[in-house]
Amino acid sequence: MDIRNAQVDVDNWIKNHGVRYFNELTNMAQLTEEVGEVARIIARRYGEQSEKESDKGKDLGEELADVLFVVLCLANQTGVDLQASFDKKMDLKTKRDHDRHHNNEKLK
Image (cartoon, rainbow, N blue to C red; front, side, top):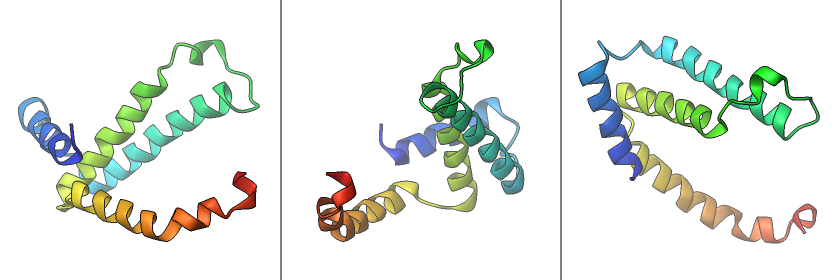
């Protein structure tokens, strides 16, 4: 599935299962909450904090999908073609960062 189709899927879900999109500020707060849940899993599972028993069953993929869902909602409701923006960003990063990363002593 490409990003453009994912945006359509989310829009169809909102139309068929939701009442409407939450407003942009609510979705921004929701995005922050979802990113926090991802950060908690990463910090405790891969970082130096111990993982609480209640966190051990949490699915990182599911939490990342929650982040993606809200990002797609925000793109839809603000008129952003995320596929075009992502393609443009990848092209920019490819041109700008290829040699920079290969020449970075910290990455060797």
